[in-house]
Structure formats: C-alpha cells, structure tokens
Length: 91
Length: 91
Image (cartoon, rainbow over the protein chains, first blue to last red):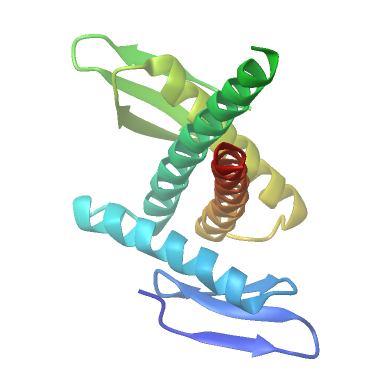
C-alpha cells in the first residue's frame, strides 16, 4: 500500500513511496505515476511476504521480473488479437 | 546484457544474472525466464546509465516502474482493440 504522495506543481515531479522508500519521478500526470508506484509497491510487498528474508534489492528485482512476465503475456494476447483481426479482414 | 545462465533440470530452477547478481527462479521454461531476466537486466542498465550514483535497490525499483509503465500502455492498447472488435461485431 502506498504511504505518501507529494506533487510539486512547479517542477512536475511526483514523490511516491515504494516499499518504505521515497522516489521522485518526473512526469506530467501525478495520478498515473501514483498508480504505477502503487502497483510496483503491491508487487514488492507480495515478494516480501513470500520471501521475508530477502534484501530490498532482491525483492525489487523479483518484482520487476513478475511485472515483465505480465507485460510479456499481455503483449502475446495483443498480438493474438491483431492476428485474429487480420485473418477476419482477409477471410 | 545477461552474464550467466544455469539450469538445474532436476529441480526446474533457472539461475540468471541480473545487474551483476544471481537469482534463482523456479519455472518450467528456462528460455522464457532467461528472456524476462534479460529484459529486466536491460532496463536496470538503462536506469544505471542515466543515474550512475543510484544504489542498486533504487535502480531496480525505477526499472520496475518503467516496466509497469509499458505494461499499462500495452493493456490500454489491448482494451482499445477489444472495444474496436466489439463495435465492429455490433455494427
């Protein structure tokens, strides 16, 4: 669960808290950055819960691997859908 | 770039090297795990290159945020495509 959020309107920097650490992220949409940070935070907490003795860097890398896994699967689904559309157009 | 890969066929565990650290990942497809690890490794190196003084945990978390950003965008593309298909079927 995300613990803090601060937005500096002048610089467009959003401060988010992920796994107990603050991160400053540049971007135009603080809500979007907040949503992504919340997602990464959730993934890290899931890994931490499963491997309570892992150091934070290992937790973060395994969370990144899990997110990459989801990304790959959605990419596959997307490509399958594109192929289906192309086949329908042809046939 | 990934530096090492070891697969223990008996246990189904794959050892990958991400940003100079070894990680043991359980899974049935070592090539898939290797591909994901290579992707996370690349993302971490991109962050490290941009912020050479960041500690590894910060690099890993920012890499995870970047991957989450890609995941969200592909999910949006996927949903847009599904809506398009539904509209075509209706009309």
